[in-house]
Length: 447
Image 1 (cartoon, rainbow, N blue to C red):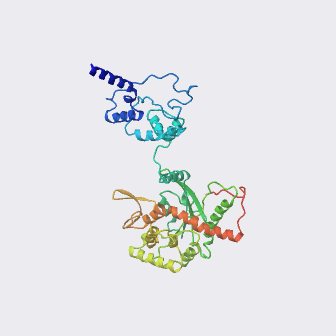
Image 2: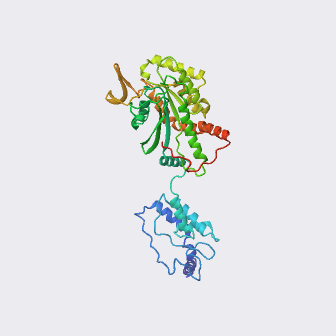
Image 3: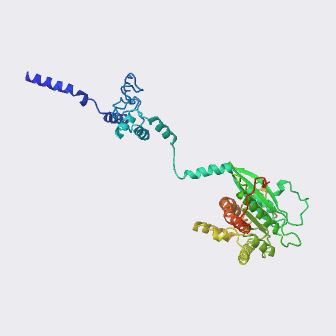
């Protein structure tokens, strides 16, 4: 009898504490459901029963002005667990974003643990939906190296400008070499030039512009040709028209810069590179060559090249290159890339190799021939075909690699930061500053 009374007493005590002992806390219920979701696959787990929606859920009542799931003291009331299983692997970032935004919304006195529990159980506070939208918008990789991709996209839209000038005697293959460099008909002949035109008494500078596109990249290429340079009987001051043209392009750019209502993108017609063609005499430079490069080396990037290098043997070519470099050094002529413009040791090392190989001995051709089952650009002779892109035959490949692949952007930067700034400082110093020019006074460039 005493044993029966004892059992009844313990059973009554258990019933009185059943609400606190048998009902797990919200965090414990969450942890147990999380561990079960990790262990038991979704297709094996039984779906929990969704409790019926109590009346007036989702809107505050006059007696309880707080949103559903939040008590009067700011704490989170226990809510039934969601019936939707949380996928393994996406649990971490979703909980992080939701708990942060919900905790911010319930900051009237609630704790971070309450916000954390509320986020896990599917509840939202004042800022829950807003935080989820921001999280979805910021998904993806974020890093400083994405600036390169941004610059690439912007540059692809605007395109490039590159202006190259060729100077030399007639018949040295200037137009052919430019066509070979860009593998397009970009010389003056494609603009309607014929040999029947009258050759002017002085040097006539012609500029022809083309828009080249490759791989979605657009480049406006302008070729400035100087036909018949040095072909006259009296070649005194024959470099003046070329120097005048170069300075006129600087003046155009300067007037656009000082204009009050200047354009968003100033047309760049400045000469970025000047290829000076040296006749393959095999002896030495002419006095005209030395004088021209000496006068223009401080206003434009000069790159000397030996034209029609296939007319000399390998030994003659090497001796001629050494003789030209020595004469340029004795004359104080600085050709691109200049030593004082090397920014670091890596640039100095690369540019030293280029300076040792200059002037490049090149061969240009726009005709293709069949060589070893391949179509190659070359010049056909009685003893074989001189392949333009073969490094064993000439140095055209080195010139193209240097001019287009590695130093094209640097040529533009040196033109703007060195040569143009020198001209700009000189003009502003002479005139005491340029007055702003109205829109009606400036003319559009035809290039």
